[in-house]
Amino acid sequence: RPLQLTRAVVLTSITRKMAITAETACKASQIMNLLFAIGMMFFPTKMMEGYKAGTFKGDGNTFFLFAMGIFGLSIMGAMVSNATMRLPSASKKAQGVQCLANCLYWTMFLLADGSKAVSGSMPKAFSGDALPQIYGNLGIFAVLAVVNYLGWTSAGSPTPDISNIVPSGALKTPLIANFVNLGFFGIGCKFFTEPFIDMYIPGVVAGINKGSPDAMEAIYLIMSNAGMCMLMNIVSALMVLAAEPGNSDTNYRIQRAWLYTNFVYLGMLSRENVVAAATGWPQPMFVATFVQSFAVTFFSASSLGAYPIKVTKSA
Image 1: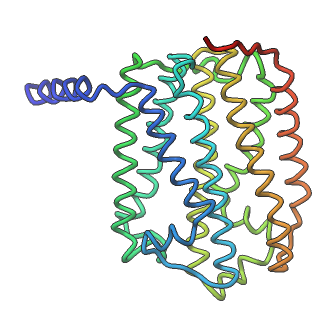
Image 2: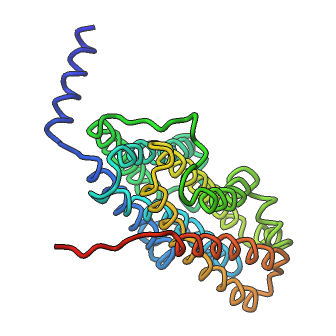
């Protein structure tokens, strides 16, 4: 008991000295998510070289870079939500719950990647010389989890109202539409990775497995983690919205953040025509994916644009 008391006193002392506010914790998550997103979406090859990870050739490399873009976009979704919730004008309670969601987000990646690194089950491309950098990532995840925990406690340790976890109030319908839409992709990527990929580009996986099995192993990990990130983005948004169910300001912020991400995704979706033309890969799900994603984005943009807001002049 004396040891437990000492630990509690030390933790309390550290919390007070560090003075990590909810705004600071959200900003830390925003910045780190932004860095990961930029690396994966725009400089994936340089990022892999920086990690001293394996690189690939041919279709294996093309698909790996494509998967990195999907993962980067998912991470960007988390970044945009933190960008709006970290602002002083955001609900303090919702801001605190965002920190709690961030803590869970970073902990999930810490456990998912950490278990693979410790057990030796990391794909070959991320083993060997890349492992020190992977462990570096794990350290970053752990620090961010702690920072956001401290941000949450500094905000008064608010919790979401689980009994009202389904969005309510202003813009609830487009919010739900966004969560259902992303949930489809998140569940498919995370829990049905191999058949889900094969559904979109049938026969391609088998070819890559023959020519570059190491690439396919890495692709499965990236797509699975992308799916986990998508699902965590949904969970985080639901938690933040349930901090004060029906709060119009929070609803507006989350809907706007998700709309920004949807716009980027539609732009990325158009590149698949270039990929198909260059590789000859079949795309039986392209039209369905476009219709589904465009419909949700158009509905979200129309709803957000029609929402009555008043912009006041700053003093």
